[in-house]
Length: 336
Ligand SMILES: [Zn+2]
Image 1 (cartoon, protein in one colour):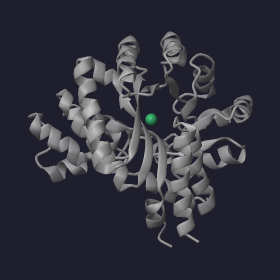
Image 2 (cartoon, protein in one colour):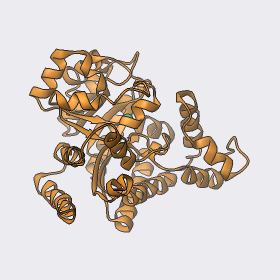
Image 3 (cartoon, helix red, strand yellow):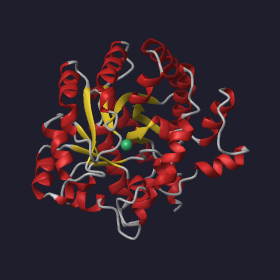
């Protein structure tokens, strides 16, 4: 069996992917040309080579260079539309996607960027027929942006553009507790609460995400395994963990010769899903995460279950969940 083709054809649900890290080299190259931004290369081929994942330091360089090509609000219409296209190509029928909001509020006027995002979403959904809900996130290393980010999210929520608030960026040195007030306000406004935790920092960061921020799902969370009490808590409360295997290897959180800890997490009864995080910048995609896990001993049935876990942990309403579950089951029936 061609596993890549098999998982490519599986209708998939994704809960942890960043728009800016998911659009490809070509999209950024087009934006750079359009905006007269000088890239540190002399051709598209060179840009594609530069864009490929090499190591963490280079990843940061690529990220900064790529987003420097974004100049006008309408660039985000294009970026978002391209994002829908990518998800469709991978047969990801429903996505909850993060947007770098600290970057947005720093660069653009709220109403202009919301108009641009709304246009990209409308066009993307019409053209590609997949559904995406967006969650802007605060870069925790820019804590001063949190009030502005919340303001933007609330305006967007009113327009039906955003469903929650996220917290990403550098985890070490920027604990969840710095964002308690913002998350309290977000909760009162009916936003879903997401937090990256337990990736670069240890269990205390996940505890903070739960106790200080009221996180409804944990991004990454793999370092929960260092704390038995935390594992028991996560299990008891069925708190979902958005796991991104390739990202963890790329950022050297896991040794390349070791199996991914998601295996242990599932054996301990934790609720996890499989995600791609920054797929274009890690030179990967969602399908490859599934293939990697089969290579590490997961059965096809286990992986189909992880996809269903993502659907169950999504913020869709019950009716929508049933609709998508129907699509997943329909595909499973074609396998018999
Ligand atoms: Zn992430």
